Image (cartoon, rainbow, N blue to C red; front, side, top):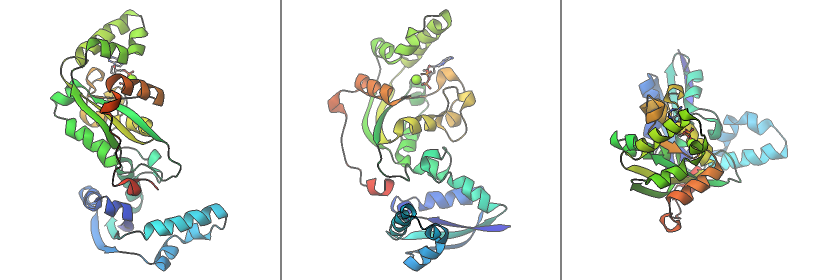
Length: 275
Ligand code: DAT
Ligand code: MG
Protein backbone atom coordinates (compact mmCIF):
# COMPACT_ATOMS: atom_id res chain seq x y z
CA UNK A 1 0.00 0.00 0.00
CA UNK A 2 1.20 3.47 -0.75
CA UNK A 3 -0.13 6.99 -0.31
CA UNK A 4 -0.35 9.93 -2.67
CA UNK A 5 -0.90 13.62 -2.04
CA UNK A 6 -3.54 15.03 -4.37
CA UNK A 7 -4.73 18.65 -4.32
CA UNK A 8 -7.58 20.36 -6.13
CA UNK A 9 -6.18 23.74 -7.15
CA UNK A 10 -8.11 27.04 -6.83
CA UNK A 11 -9.58 26.73 -10.34
CA UNK A 12 -10.94 23.24 -9.56
CA UNK A 13 -12.70 24.60 -6.47
CA UNK A 14 -14.00 27.68 -8.32
CA UNK A 15 -15.31 25.51 -11.13
CA UNK A 16 -17.20 23.26 -8.61
CA UNK A 17 -15.21 20.15 -9.50
CA UNK A 18 -14.43 18.98 -5.95
CA UNK A 19 -17.12 16.27 -5.92
CA UNK A 20 -16.20 15.10 -9.43
CA UNK A 21 -12.51 14.66 -8.55
CA UNK A 22 -13.27 12.96 -5.22
CA UNK A 23 -15.67 10.65 -7.01
CA UNK A 24 -13.05 9.54 -9.52
CA UNK A 25 -10.68 8.41 -6.78
CA UNK A 26 -13.44 6.83 -4.69
CA UNK A 27 -14.98 4.84 -7.52
CA UNK A 28 -11.57 3.60 -8.60
CA UNK A 29 -11.40 2.09 -5.12
CA UNK A 30 -8.78 4.23 -3.39
CA UNK A 31 -9.17 4.98 0.29
CA UNK A 32 -9.36 8.57 1.51
CA UNK A 33 -7.17 9.00 4.62
CA UNK A 34 -6.89 12.80 4.88
CA UNK A 35 -8.89 15.72 3.54
CA UNK A 36 -8.99 19.47 4.19
CA UNK A 37 -9.77 22.73 2.51
CA UNK A 38 -7.18 25.44 3.10
CA UNK A 39 -5.61 28.55 1.67
CA UNK A 40 -1.89 27.75 1.55
CA UNK A 41 0.76 30.19 2.75
CA UNK A 42 3.54 31.38 0.46
CA UNK A 43 6.06 29.46 2.61
CA UNK A 44 4.15 26.19 2.21
CA UNK A 45 3.98 26.61 -1.57
CA UNK A 46 7.66 27.52 -1.84
CA UNK A 47 8.51 24.33 0.00
CA UNK A 48 6.04 22.31 -2.10
CA UNK A 49 7.40 23.60 -5.42
CA UNK A 50 11.02 23.69 -4.29
CA UNK A 51 12.36 21.96 -7.44
CA UNK A 52 10.81 24.58 -9.69
CA UNK A 53 12.06 27.36 -7.43
CA UNK A 54 15.59 25.93 -7.55
CA UNK A 55 15.92 26.59 -11.30
CA UNK A 56 17.38 30.07 -11.45
CA UNK A 57 16.84 31.26 -15.03
CA UNK A 58 14.59 34.23 -15.71
CA UNK A 59 11.85 32.27 -17.46
CA UNK A 60 11.31 29.85 -14.60
CA UNK A 61 11.54 32.67 -12.04
CA UNK A 62 8.60 34.38 -13.73
CA UNK A 63 6.71 31.10 -14.06
CA UNK A 64 7.34 30.29 -10.41
CA UNK A 65 5.91 33.64 -9.28
CA UNK A 66 2.79 33.16 -11.43
CA UNK A 67 2.38 29.65 -10.03
CA UNK A 68 2.49 30.90 -6.43
CA UNK A 69 0.00 33.68 -7.24
CA UNK A 70 -2.35 31.19 -8.92
CA UNK A 71 -2.11 28.69 -6.05
CA UNK A 72 -2.89 31.47 -3.55
CA UNK A 73 -5.83 32.86 -5.50
CA UNK A 74 -8.45 30.88 -3.56
CA UNK A 75 -8.90 27.86 -1.31
CA UNK A 76 -7.56 24.48 -2.38
CA UNK A 77 -8.63 20.98 -1.31
CA UNK A 78 -5.76 18.83 -0.07
CA UNK A 79 -6.14 15.04 0.14
CA UNK A 80 -4.23 11.86 0.83
CA UNK A 81 -5.36 8.74 -1.00
CA UNK A 82 -4.19 5.23 -0.16
CA UNK A 83 -4.03 2.11 -2.30
CA UNK A 84 -1.82 -0.12 -4.41
CA UNK A 85 0.37 1.93 -6.74
CA UNK A 86 -1.78 5.04 -6.12
CA UNK A 87 1.06 7.44 -6.91
CA UNK A 88 1.47 6.23 -10.48
CA UNK A 89 -2.21 5.49 -11.08
CA UNK A 90 -3.23 8.82 -9.56
CA UNK A 91 -0.99 10.58 -12.11
CA UNK A 92 -2.59 8.50 -14.88
CA UNK A 93 -6.04 9.55 -13.67
CA UNK A 94 -5.03 13.24 -13.69
CA UNK A 95 -3.71 13.07 -17.27
CA UNK A 96 -0.76 14.90 -18.83
CA UNK A 97 0.48 18.16 -17.23
CA UNK A 98 -0.47 20.02 -20.40
CA UNK A 99 -4.25 19.70 -21.03
CA UNK A 100 -3.57 19.83 -24.75
CA UNK A 101 -1.89 16.45 -24.33
CA UNK A 102 -4.32 15.00 -21.78
CA UNK A 103 -6.59 12.39 -23.31
CA UNK A 104 -10.38 12.08 -22.83
CA UNK A 105 -11.21 10.06 -19.73
CA UNK A 106 -8.52 11.74 -17.61
CA UNK A 107 -9.43 14.58 -15.21
CA UNK A 108 -7.43 17.17 -17.13
CA UNK A 109 -8.53 15.76 -20.49
CA UNK A 110 -12.18 16.06 -19.47
CA UNK A 111 -12.15 19.40 -17.63
CA UNK A 112 -9.24 21.61 -18.68
CA UNK A 113 -8.01 23.44 -21.75
CA UNK A 114 -4.75 25.27 -21.21
CA UNK A 115 -1.53 25.70 -19.29
CA UNK A 116 -0.31 28.45 -21.59
CA UNK A 117 -0.62 32.10 -22.45
CA UNK A 118 -1.12 33.89 -25.75
CA UNK A 119 -4.03 31.65 -26.48
CA UNK A 120 -5.55 31.64 -29.96
CA UNK A 121 -9.32 31.24 -29.83
CA UNK A 122 -10.89 29.01 -32.45
CA UNK A 123 -14.36 27.85 -33.34
CA UNK A 124 -15.44 24.39 -34.38
CA UNK A 125 -18.64 23.10 -35.95
CA UNK A 126 -19.98 20.08 -34.08
CA UNK A 127 -23.21 18.26 -34.96
CA UNK A 128 -25.13 15.51 -33.22
CA UNK A 129 -26.31 13.23 -36.02
CA UNK A 130 -29.82 11.70 -36.21
CA UNK A 131 -28.75 8.57 -34.29
CA UNK A 132 -27.35 10.72 -31.46
CA UNK A 133 -30.67 12.54 -31.13
CA UNK A 134 -32.70 9.28 -31.34
CA UNK A 135 -30.49 7.67 -28.73
CA UNK A 136 -31.04 10.62 -26.30
CA UNK A 137 -27.38 11.58 -26.28
CA UNK A 138 -27.86 15.32 -26.85
CA UNK A 139 -27.30 16.29 -23.21
CA UNK A 140 -24.39 13.86 -22.84
CA UNK A 141 -22.54 15.38 -25.79
CA UNK A 142 -23.28 18.96 -24.70
CA UNK A 143 -22.05 18.07 -21.20
CA UNK A 144 -18.72 16.87 -22.52
CA UNK A 145 -17.97 20.14 -24.30
CA UNK A 146 -19.30 22.30 -21.47
CA UNK A 147 -17.38 20.50 -18.73
CA UNK A 148 -14.16 20.75 -20.69
CA UNK A 149 -14.64 24.51 -20.57
CA UNK A 150 -15.53 25.31 -24.18
CA UNK A 151 -18.04 28.07 -24.82
CA UNK A 152 -21.24 27.38 -26.74
CA UNK A 153 -21.80 30.19 -29.25
CA UNK A 154 -24.45 28.70 -31.56
CA UNK A 155 -27.02 25.90 -31.27
CA UNK A 156 -30.02 24.72 -33.26
CA UNK A 157 -31.98 21.62 -34.08
CA UNK A 158 -32.78 21.20 -37.76
CA UNK A 159 -33.42 18.69 -40.48
CA UNK A 160 -30.81 19.46 -43.14
CA UNK A 161 -31.65 19.60 -46.83
CA UNK A 162 -29.92 17.36 -49.36
CA UNK A 163 -28.21 20.45 -50.83
CA UNK A 164 -26.76 21.46 -47.46
CA UNK A 165 -25.40 17.95 -46.87
CA UNK A 166 -23.94 17.71 -50.37
CA UNK A 167 -22.09 20.96 -49.74
CA UNK A 168 -21.04 19.82 -46.25
CA UNK A 169 -19.66 16.50 -47.49
CA UNK A 170 -18.32 17.88 -50.74
CA UNK A 171 -14.88 16.19 -50.38
CA UNK A 172 -16.50 12.78 -50.03
CA UNK A 173 -18.84 13.51 -52.93
CA UNK A 174 -15.87 14.50 -55.11
CA UNK A 175 -14.41 10.98 -54.97
CA UNK A 176 -15.94 9.31 -58.00
CA UNK A 177 -15.34 5.58 -57.52
CA UNK A 178 -18.34 3.27 -57.16
CA UNK A 179 -17.65 2.40 -53.53
CA UNK A 180 -17.63 6.00 -52.33
CA UNK A 181 -20.67 6.84 -54.51
CA UNK A 182 -22.65 4.17 -52.68
CA UNK A 183 -21.27 5.26 -49.32
CA UNK A 184 -22.05 8.91 -50.08
CA UNK A 185 -25.70 8.08 -50.86
CA UNK A 186 -26.02 6.06 -47.65
CA UNK A 187 -24.45 8.91 -45.70
CA UNK A 188 -26.96 11.46 -47.07
CA UNK A 189 -29.89 9.14 -46.35
CA UNK A 190 -28.66 8.59 -42.81
CA UNK A 191 -28.05 12.31 -42.19
CA UNK A 192 -31.59 13.10 -43.43
CA UNK A 193 -33.28 10.38 -41.38
CA UNK A 194 -34.20 12.71 -38.50
CA UNK A 195 -33.33 16.01 -36.85
CA UNK A 196 -29.75 16.78 -36.00
CA UNK A 197 -28.36 19.26 -33.43
CA UNK A 198 -25.86 21.71 -34.91
CA UNK A 199 -23.48 23.64 -32.64
CA UNK A 200 -20.52 25.98 -32.66
CA UNK A 201 -18.03 25.71 -29.79
CA UNK A 202 -15.31 28.25 -29.03
CA UNK A 203 -12.03 27.88 -27.15
CA UNK A 204 -8.32 27.39 -27.42
CA UNK A 205 -7.49 24.78 -30.06
CA UNK A 206 -11.08 23.51 -29.98
CA UNK A 207 -10.93 22.06 -33.51
CA UNK A 208 -8.18 19.58 -32.73
CA UNK A 209 -9.28 18.91 -29.15
CA UNK A 210 -12.90 18.52 -30.27
CA UNK A 211 -11.82 15.79 -32.69
CA UNK A 212 -9.89 14.12 -29.85
CA UNK A 213 -13.05 14.22 -27.71
CA UNK A 214 -15.12 12.65 -30.52
CA UNK A 215 -12.65 9.80 -31.03
CA UNK A 216 -11.69 8.07 -34.29
CA UNK A 217 -14.14 8.18 -37.23
CA UNK A 218 -14.48 4.41 -37.00
CA UNK A 219 -15.88 3.45 -33.58
CA UNK A 220 -13.91 0.22 -33.82
CA UNK A 221 -10.80 2.37 -33.40
CA UNK A 222 -12.23 4.92 -30.93
CA UNK A 223 -10.78 4.52 -27.44
CA UNK A 224 -12.80 4.50 -24.20
CA UNK A 225 -13.29 8.01 -22.83
CA UNK A 226 -14.10 9.45 -26.26
CA UNK A 227 -17.71 10.04 -27.34
CA UNK A 228 -17.60 7.44 -30.10
CA UNK A 229 -15.56 5.04 -27.96
CA UNK A 230 -18.17 5.25 -25.22
CA UNK A 231 -21.41 5.22 -27.23
CA UNK A 232 -20.99 3.78 -30.73
CA UNK A 233 -20.20 0.55 -32.52
CA UNK A 234 -20.08 1.09 -36.27
CA UNK A 235 -18.78 3.78 -38.68
CA UNK A 236 -22.09 4.34 -40.45
CA UNK A 237 -23.70 5.26 -37.08
CA UNK A 238 -21.05 7.30 -35.33
CA UNK A 239 -23.49 9.87 -33.76
CA UNK A 240 -21.43 13.03 -34.03
CA UNK A 241 -19.57 15.27 -36.46
CA UNK A 242 -16.67 17.64 -35.72
CA UNK A 243 -14.69 19.89 -38.07
CA UNK A 244 -11.33 18.40 -39.02
CA UNK A 245 -9.37 21.66 -39.52
CA UNK A 246 -9.68 25.36 -38.83
CA UNK A 247 -10.36 25.91 -42.55
CA UNK A 248 -13.19 23.37 -42.70
CA UNK A 249 -14.59 24.73 -39.43
CA UNK A 250 -14.88 28.16 -41.03
CA UNK A 251 -16.55 26.73 -44.10
CA UNK A 252 -18.96 24.58 -42.08
CA UNK A 253 -19.95 27.33 -39.64
CA UNK A 254 -20.78 29.60 -42.58
CA UNK A 255 -22.77 26.84 -44.21
CA UNK A 256 -24.88 25.85 -41.20
CA UNK A 257 -25.32 29.18 -39.40
CA UNK A 258 -26.15 32.72 -40.38
CA UNK A 259 -24.01 35.44 -38.81
CA UNK A 260 -26.84 36.56 -36.50
CA UNK A 261 -27.29 33.02 -35.17
CA UNK A 262 -23.85 33.16 -33.55
CA UNK A 263 -23.77 34.69 -30.06
CA UNK A 264 -20.78 36.55 -28.67
CA UNK A 265 -20.80 36.47 -24.89
CA UNK A 266 -18.38 36.58 -21.96
CA UNK A 267 -18.33 33.40 -19.94
CA UNK A 268 -17.96 33.94 -16.18
CA UNK A 269 -15.46 31.10 -15.73
CA UNK A 270 -13.05 32.47 -18.32
CA UNK A 271 -10.44 33.50 -15.74
CA UNK A 272 -10.53 30.00 -14.26
CA UNK A 273 -10.08 28.34 -17.65
CA UNK A 274 -7.33 30.48 -19.13
CA UNK A 275 -4.25 32.01 -17.54
P1 DAT B 1 -15.30 12.26 -39.80
O1 DAT B 1 -16.78 12.27 -39.59
O2 DAT B 1 -14.61 11.60 -38.66
O3 DAT B 1 -14.73 13.60 -40.12
P2 DAT B 1 -15.08 11.65 -42.63
O4 DAT B 1 -15.22 13.11 -42.85
O5 DAT B 1 -13.94 10.94 -43.29
O6 DAT B 1 -15.01 11.31 -41.06
O7 DAT B 1 -16.42 10.91 -43.10
C1 DAT B 1 -17.67 11.49 -42.86
C2 DAT B 1 -18.62 10.44 -42.32
O8 DAT B 1 -18.85 9.45 -43.29
C3 DAT B 1 -18.11 9.68 -41.10
O9 DAT B 1 -18.41 10.34 -39.90
C4 DAT B 1 -18.84 8.39 -41.19
C5 DAT B 1 -18.98 8.17 -42.66
N1 DAT B 1 -17.92 7.28 -43.15
C6 DAT B 1 -16.61 7.58 -43.33
N2 DAT B 1 -15.93 6.54 -43.83
C7 DAT B 1 -16.84 5.55 -43.99
C8 DAT B 1 -16.79 4.23 -44.47
N3 DAT B 1 -15.66 3.68 -44.90
N4 DAT B 1 -17.93 3.50 -44.47
C9 DAT B 1 -19.10 4.03 -44.03
N5 DAT B 1 -19.21 5.28 -43.59
C10 DAT B 1 -18.11 6.02 -43.56
MG1 MG C 1 -14.97 14.91 -41.79
